[in-house]
Amino acid sequence: MIIVMQRQAPKDQIERVLEEIKRYEGLKPIPLIGTERTVIAVIGDERVLDERHIASLPGVSNVMPVLRPYKLASRETKYESTVVKCGNGVKIGGKTVVVMAGPCSVESDAQIEEAAKAVKKAGSTILRGGAFKPRTTPYSFQGLGRKGIQMLEIAAKKHGLVSISEVMDVRDVEFVARHIDILQIGARNMQNFDLLKEVGKTKKPVMLKRGLSATIKEFLLAAEYILAQGNQDVILCERGIRTFEDETRNTLCIATVPIVKELSHLPIIVDPSHGTGKINLIAPMSRAAIAAGADGIMVEVHTNPDTALCDADQALNEDKFKNLMGEIKPIVKAVGRTM
Ligand code: PEP
Ligand code: MN
Image 1 (cartoon, rainbow, N blue to C red):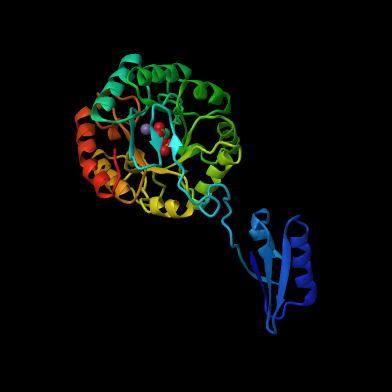
Image 2: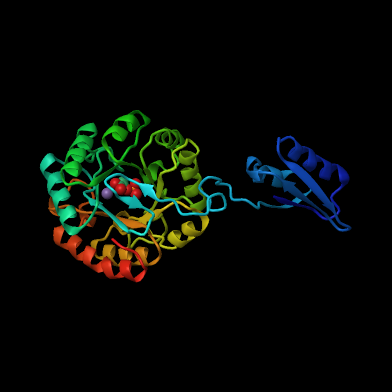
């Protein structure tokens, strides 16, 4: 960290900053005294320091951190891209672009079985299905809970698919981790720090979705919570953010993909279903995501969208999903990857 003092800052203010830095074991402040102003270079891992606190000290003009605040998620710490093994030979973050597909929510044994069959047939390797649903209103369908988790597990296993499902409550983490291959943390829980720590203690891959109004820095710091518990298998998911635009359900930020690739070694996938909320935008946004370097996409598929209990407007039917798979293939090839 570089701390620039104000012009002519008195000696006692400089001393005060030096004392503050020395309070932290492992940090050493080196004052560079100039004729006009003093600059203090901090040697050591500066991330223990609160940048805003240092900036608020009397006489401080500017604070410039050198290291990213997310230590474990950063490419500065680990240069090679992380490849997350999800079981069944499915890897996220390698040469392959994965497609996670399935209904917004698990509704019945028959519904999830049909969905599994359809997504498998079209070439997907990962089956999604929500059992714990974060609904805006408490009066809409809340998901089948643990029963839904078991239905998803059965359907995925039957078709040799990897399963992914959201967990919302720390009390369900152990159960979901026992039955499902990838734990999903939804956008609304991106900063539920106790939940992040709990999934960080499991040995299952975790897919973390970007919060509705989270910056990329906050997104990576949320991932840091999981990594800091010892779970290195974190997959990020861009799913759009809230903006003033109302043509789409959310504003899908494709730029997140190359930005995250530069800042972090973690794989990142894109969810154009929640990102746009519109069926006709799913294919173009999927192509854009893959072209931008995404490691995969997550799309909502229902074999009978008219009857879907959740997110019916954005669910692709079997034919549309098949077309989508055909449309992304040339893009996957063009960026030198495989499906
Ligand atoms: C989901 O994927 O089921 C979901 C609820 O998405 P998000 O958390 O991104 O809203
Ligand atoms: Mn949904």
